[in-house]
Length: 239
Image (cartoon, rainbow, N blue to C red; front, side, top):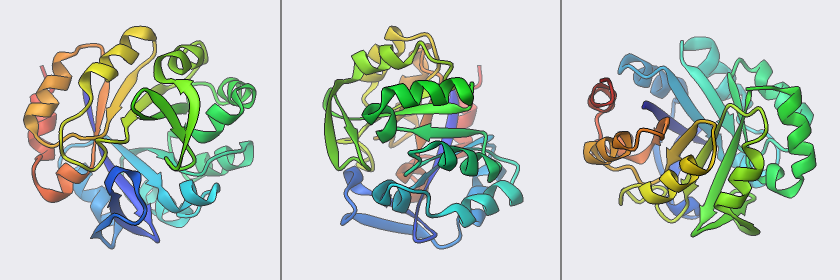
């Protein structure tokens, strides 16, 4: 199982939002490139980047910082946040990232998302964010009519790189990931599923790793606050 450290960008700084709430922000690092390099030095090969300003505004914002990360580190980078049209996908890929995460627009216009998945085969990731069992959109500010599993199944027929499932209630809370819901999604589809939200320590990593059909896990606040050591987490998942 891959351990993917996360950088959430707001006004060019590395932050975390508690349960996705913009008024509950913790700022950790002013230099995202330095933070990304430290993750690489600890053994990470992938980096998960969320443009929080972009998610809120509906268009990419922190592109300069993302491009600096891809140019100055050897990390493979996946990026989400405010990417809602074809031009935004193309421009994001031009920054040197490997994968683009689409959430809101995939739910709002599945026909468009299907076309984009075919156009950018194996370069798009579905960001499946949820409150309970219902998919959320617009930077987690709105709730859709879709349930997690039904939308995952609908999207899994497309040539996607992966599905990232985030339990919003657990995100940034250091209370443990929603392993059962992640397992349910992974059992329902035949493409890689990435767990996100709530990871707090090495025990969480081991419990996720024990579910062999979960391909990767994203860790954020636990790494910044020292409750999870990235090198130990990577070592624990190498069999």
